[in-house]
Length: 147
Image (cartoon, rainbow, N blue to C red; front, top):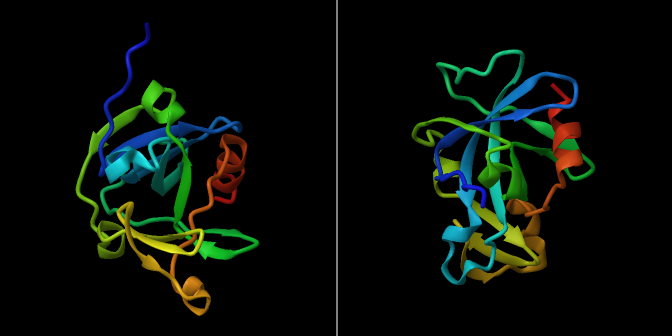
């Protein structure tokens, strides 16, 4: 029986990339902490650095990524590699960006605050909120390769 890594919002972790580099990231939100565990297999994170270093940068700022939907800082993916320790936790710290502390996202036209349902969004408001799009691990690696 394998032990699961304990992970909390604010924890820093590394993602080993296919090109040999490391991404240093911070957990923003873990879905299993939402009431009803509707999002129990998903978490959201931001990336602080991509390179050869595994250290947490002194100044926390998040990298941006591009895809067909535009520019964003938050990546949603499955929890398996994080909880298994394949993506090891290397420390913990406060989430300093206020919009990440009050983490809101749109999932299927519903607005959630830290995973708790707030309201149904009118379609004209969809663009005002981050859309939850779950990235597979290969896509995570491709996104990280933008840096």
